[in-house]
Amino acid sequence: MRNFNEDNITQAVLSRLSGCKDDRTRAISEALVRHLHAFVKEIEPSEAEWARAIDFLTRTGQMCSDTRQEFILLSDTLGVSMLVDAINHRFAGRSTETTVLGPFYVEEAQDLPLGADISHDADGPPLLVRGTVRDQRGEPIAGALIETWHADDEGLYDVQCSTGRAALDMRARFRTDDNGRFWFRSIVPAAYPIPNDGPVGKMLDAQGRHPYRPAHVHFKLSAPGFETIVTHVFLDGDRYLDSDVVFGVKDALIERLGSVDDEPDTALLAYDFVLPDQHRQG
Ligand code: BEZ
Ligand code: FE
View 1 (cartoon, rainbow, N blue to C red):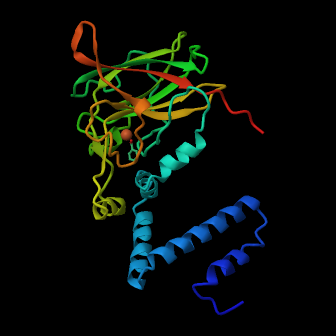
View 2 (view 1 turned 90 degrees about the horizontal axis):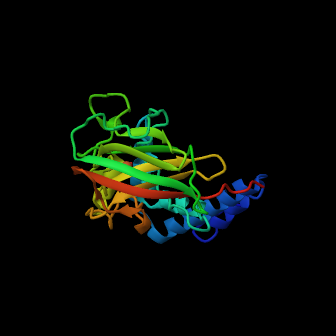
View 3 (view 1 turned 30 degrees about the vertical axis):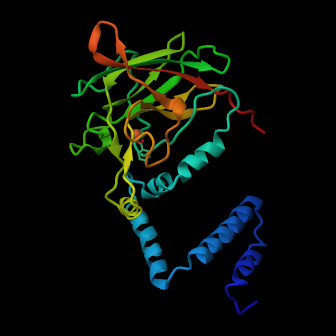
């Protein structure tokens, strides 16, 4: 077939995919072609605009390194990461809501004993974090792995600090006790802008958007027999709760800071997590 034009080229490309042996690859390729062609037909880009689009994607790739994933930031800021998250966490029953992992998760964080100070005496308002991990029936899960990480009181993660110190501050791994409880100390995190010195930052500027996330503490919770939950707890009252640049906020994940008996200077962040039963395979 020849003589492709606006009216027949979409169908021509789709026909070219008919030989694809893998059903999933064919379905994905077909949807990509259909939606991409519809997008181009809707916006009718000039050739200069299309060249700028290609240049934007090229720069996005060039910005990526072992420590910077600009494509994930692009997915986050266009709401795609939260859409994928929602599609993959349609848990029935009462289980903790999920949200984006973000780029500052570090697998090799330190295992610390319950009660440890994960800020390692960093400056900032003292914080006590405590809670429980339970199953959907309300039973405590003993020995659940809690991975936590958060920004400091200036909104910076340890891995962003120019000192290049090891990724050890404001992050740690804990195990719940026999009653499913956990607790640790840290400092109150601040709201922060996502890395915005690259193409995604320029895109946000062009779209008239700010780059901020409301203050939060990240949690990844896992235990044998349960689905792993990746989530945050957001601090109530933050000015960015309704305009999180990555669309990650859910009401059920917002918690007001409380107070700690006999420690007037320490804020309390209390949260009880519920892990869904593991999906049965096959
Ligand atoms: C974060 O919360 O760490 C984060 C999430 C998405 C993009 C950037 C940062
Ligand atoms: Fe974060």
